[in-house]
Amino acid sequence: MLLEVLGYSRNRLAMSNIGLQHPLADWNQSAETLYNQYHANWKLSCLRPANQPLTRLKQYTSLLEKEPAWPKRILEQVTLFKDEACMDTISNHKRSQGMQKMKTVFQSDIFHNFVGETRFHTIMIDAILPLIEAEKLMDTEAIWLDWWLGDKPNTSAIYLNQLLSAESRSPNRNAWIQGLYGLLVNQFSRIIEIPNEHSQRDASMDPFHH
Image 1 (cartoon, rainbow, N blue to C red):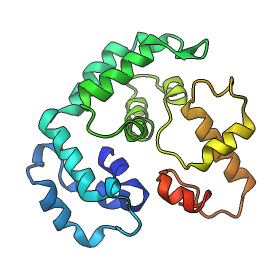
Image 2 (tube, rainbow, N blue to C red; image 1 turned 45 degrees about the vertical axis):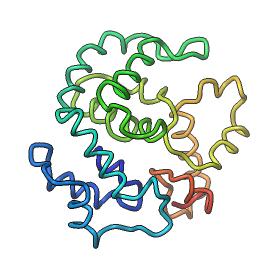
Image 3 (tube, rainbow, N blue to C red; image 1 turned 180 degrees about the vertical axis):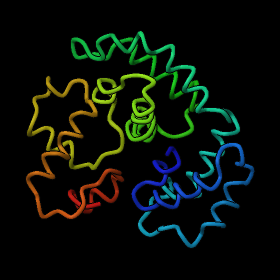
């Protein structure tokens, strides 16, 4: 699922297939080899250099070099965070020390900053926290709602400014973005697809379709 999130909306399926066909135990090929092996499946038009699948495969490979058993590390850390997760996630417009610690542990200690800040938050929102919840390892609903913002369309800030006061938006939370998409789905019933991956470049071309 981590590879799927790295694929963005255009290459999620191709990245997911790589993850299914090359599990961690058998990940012994270079990023370039994998990229060429699946070359026919890539959708490369209009992608920024940072979002090119070869770049993302190199990033993932670098993670495996530093943390080949990252799923096991997550299981170890979830046990430690269970008690802290019972604390308030946000109080007086500030995230709790427990949330700050969780962010640091996952971003730096487990994932070794292998991607940028917003992409890391998208990975947590779209993959890690839902998987922890699905496996019944820990209740992550409140953490998911109060997590930092991941990738999002540029236009989302405009809508949130109109819907919420500056005080209400502090700190920015994943819940606001998820709620915004829900409002858009309800209001614009003719929209065929609302993005669940949010390339800022693509979103700036069309605020509602990605």
